[in-house]
Length: 261
Image 1 (tube, rainbow, N blue to C red):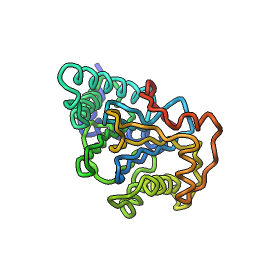
Image 2 (image 1 turned 180 degrees about the vertical axis):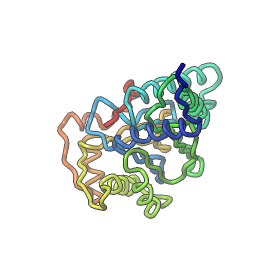
Image 3 (image 1 turned 30 degrees about the horizontal axis):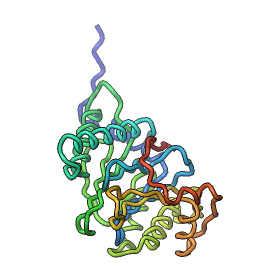
């Protein structure tokens, strides 16, 4: 009778972590920044059908990198959790902290289970408050841990380099245009220190804007509005057509997630 192949628990977990990190590293990065009036999400994403950034609830949004089908399942689960909790109790009881805890439990259970592979995803959950000091941003790696972030955070293939760039340049009280410019500059940098040109068509941008009078604070920035913001702040853009302009004022609640390239 042959002896079963033995792998220590420490080695098994290290292998699972390495597997997940390699999958996440293949995804294009997402940057989340606080600015004076809220939180802005900027993702390198040429697709207009598959979103990396989505609305979860009134003041809460979600961003992710990695495998689309995996984080889309998590996004849908988050929407269901928020809707059920808001309906059962009160809308104010739906918080980013509570949602992050739910995601952490799910990711942690999957990561530690030997019966299935770990999720190749990294998430950001953000909530805009009534004042900048009340904003909440949580980063959730593949293993289900929770990292409380402030100011700026990046996830995806080049996250370490982008985060270092943002930490040196981000400041409190930035305007939306300034924050958007900084985000695009950070996403444009490659591993060798060079810079690429990202156009408006290659970006997915959304905000949680505390100044909006309606209960839902999530808004996508599309088309001519995005091009105008980038041009005003010195970034190179390519203008979109009338279809993009018509989408400027839309306040869509997403039914799709994003990608994994």
